[in-house]
Amino acid sequence: MIIMFKDAIDTIERLWSTDPVMNHQPDVRQARNTLNARRRALRDELKNIEQAIEAIDRAIASGAAPLTRAPRVGTVKEAVANVVRTSPRPIHANDIVLALQAQGIELSPKDPKGTVVTALIRLRNARQVEAMGRNTYRWIGESAE
Image 1: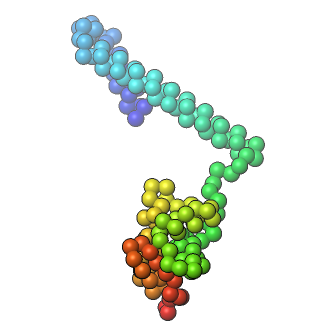
Image 2 (image 1 turned 90 degrees about the vertical axis):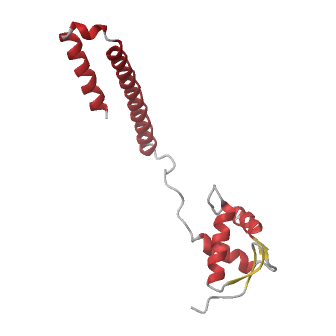
Image 3 (image 1 turned 180 degrees about the vertical axis):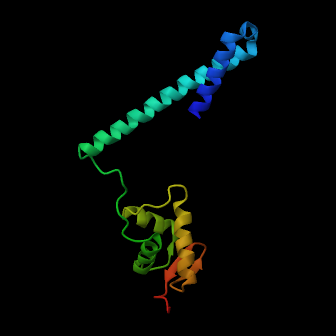
């Protein structure tokens, strides 16, 4: 894309220098100014990207904390099953969310309850939990599969 802008500016400058009438057309001047402003903005953006890459390279070279997430220890479905299994009474999805967060398990930041309810529905379909009410489930045992 940067090459297209440069080519357009070069074409306008070439026309500008060879045709004196072009100097008097405000549309062409405005287009040139707009393209030059965009070129400067892209140059600044590229500089910021290069600085960010250099900062990451320095962090990696210095042995700073890894940039990857912690390894997963299981699925959300397994974690939900464990919470329901260990609960002495039927448990609501909101309580399961709180229990999982207390254990340090990462759920979807957009809709953590939706993530848990999805896991509960899959467990219900596998006949491992039973719905006792709206988003309230109890453990009924391992799947026969």
